[in-house]
Amino acid sequence: MTVTYTGQVTWANKAPAANVEIRVFRELKDGSLGMELTLEAGKSDSDGNFTLEMRDSKLLEGLFLADFDLLSFEFSDINPLGFDLGINPRPAVLFTYSLNGQSIHTQLPFRKIHRGYQLPYHAPVDFLPSKDGFDFVNSFKPFDPMISLPSWLGIKPIPGSYGLCGGMSAAAYDFRLVRITHPQAPDIRQYHDVPKTATSLHRYLVRRSLDTFGMGGAFVNRVGDWTLLPDEGLGGVQNLSYIELPEIVHNLQLGQCLVLALIYERADDFGDMLRKIWRNHQVLAYGYNQTGLNTLEIPIYDCNYKNRDDIVLAIEQVPVGESIEGPIFGLKTYEVIPSRTDKTVRGFFRMNYQACLPPGC
Image (cartoon, rainbow, N blue to C red; front, side, top):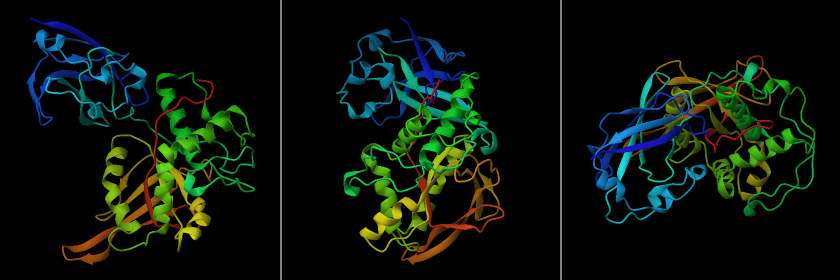
């Protein structure tokens, strides 16, 4: 006996994902896929909607309702793996789709009630700072009230001028993503001047800056930790950047933009770190070019400079120490800004990003 199942699949920013192949399988105890339950693979339409015909209706109708089944679609980013499903068998949904010419497979738990599924990637975009970045630079006037920072930093006032580099980087990606599905959405290029305090754009950029810090300021803590670490050796920032690089490159190759933390500063102790942590920076990476056997470039939108399409991170793999297992590798990195002196980047890593609708959308 068969059963009809309908649902919707979206990208990570909740935009409909079209032309995604959907199949349902029994999930084995080790998380791998067993027998297929779909009679024929489904395909999502332009609105992300799909319909499947599946066998084994007794299994599907008798499924245990886990808590995540009862959550609304708006909370579909809740991780269902934390819930106890007992011994009840549960199907898994396999999504197959293309990103920048690469075939991607995403496996998600089957949902019986709220049938909204969210892929872990955004639709690929072409990004260029001169048309997709803000037409002003990252320099803001002081404002009240003071921003609340993680408890270990206390409450500190913003200095005479301050930056919202994380907010501007995340916002530029927000604006670019929303225009894929809403071509009439506000254009980021309409903003030519630094927004005044408390305007909708200013509040949005402050919020997006705080969003990049992650839950409880976890990513601020990480910036602080990396500011204190040495450059070389096992566990130094160059070695840690080397460990981070494969995932960063993989996402860039799939057409994803990434907010990166650039660690410029080196602190001698905790007090020194509190003074220097805010001299580090955030940028938006939007591409990847292999320039040699051990070298590559990552084009970036650096909001400290407007309309610059020629700024890149120049990265070279180098030995940074020795262990009993052999050489320890790291990355020597420079921010290259033509007509200016190259800036040494001690290390870099991916910051938190979840898409958000810009003002007026």
